[in-house]
Image (cartoon, rainbow, N blue to C red; front, side, top):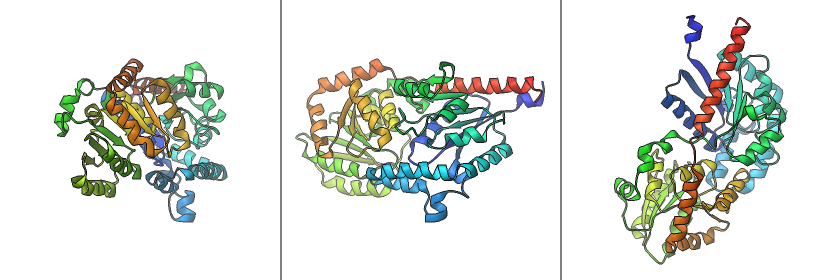
Length: 400
C-alpha cells in the first residue's frame, strides 16, 4: 500500500479565544476524536494569533488584542459593549478581508491540512475564499445554539462552500437551510460538549456519592453557581444575596480562572451563615453538577448543555446577557429545564422558591431526562470522516 495512504490526516480547527466557548468546543471535539482512536492529528489554531497576527487590528493600533477587550467585557458583565463590539468585528473583517484571505491561503498552502473546520463567527467567508481550488474540504460548526441577526456564522458564501455545517438545534438548522445548506450537508446533532459528560460512571453517579466525593454536606440544599471560565462579579453578588435565605444553604461558587474572585469569596466564607465552597478552574465540574440541587448560570450554550447532560435544573442569570445568548434563556424556560431571571435582585427569590418546592425541581429533572441530550461529537466526527473520504477519492481520481 502506498505510504501516502498510511499518512495520518491533519484536521485543523480554527478558533478565536474571544470567550471560552470556541476553544471549549474545539477541545471537546478533539477529546472525542482521541477517545475514538482515529488516525487524525487535530490541531486547534487561534487564527488571530497564529495566522493574522500581522493584521490583528487591536494589537497593531490599540496595543491590546480584540479578544482581550471582549473577554474583559465578559469578566466584568459589560454586556452594553456587545453591540459595538459586534459592529467593530464585522467592520474590521470587511476592511481586512483581502489581506486575511492571502495570509490564510499561504498558511494552508504551507501546512496542507486535510480538512479545515471553523468554530468561529464573522470570518467564514475568508476561509471559503482562501480554500477555493485547493482541494481541502471546509466544515463549519456553530458553538452557539442559534445564529442571531445580522448573521455572524451563516453566510451564503460560507454555507455554499462548506462540505458540512454542524448546528445545535432546529432553529439553527432552519437558518442554515435558509442560507442554502442542503439536508445532505446539514449535521443536526446538538451542541458538542466534552465526552466525559456521557461516560457511564459520570451518568450513574448519585447525588449522595458525588457529595461524599467533594466533601459536601449531604443534607443541605446546594445551589452551584457557574458563570463561565472567567467567573464574574455576579458570583459574589449571588453568594451575598443567598445569605438572606430562610434556611442554611450550601453554596458552591465556581470562579474559573478568576483567582481574585476565589480569594475574595474564601475570605468571606468564615463569617457567612451559609456554607460556601469556592472553586477555581476545574475539569471535574460535570461530577460536581451531580452533587448540586440546581445550577445558577449565565445562558452560555456550553454551560446549558453540560448541565442538561448531567441532569441538573437550571436557573439562568438573564440580567446581563450577550446578544447571541438571549435565545438560550428562552429555550431553557420553554422546554421546562429551568427558570430565566431577568433581574439579579430576583435571583434569591427564584432559587428560594425552588428550594421550598422540590416537586418543581423534580419536574425540571424529568423534562431534562425526556430531552435526552446526545453526544453531538459523534455525528460531527462522522461528517469529518465523510469529507475526508470524499476528498481522498477525488485526489485518487485526479491522480494526486
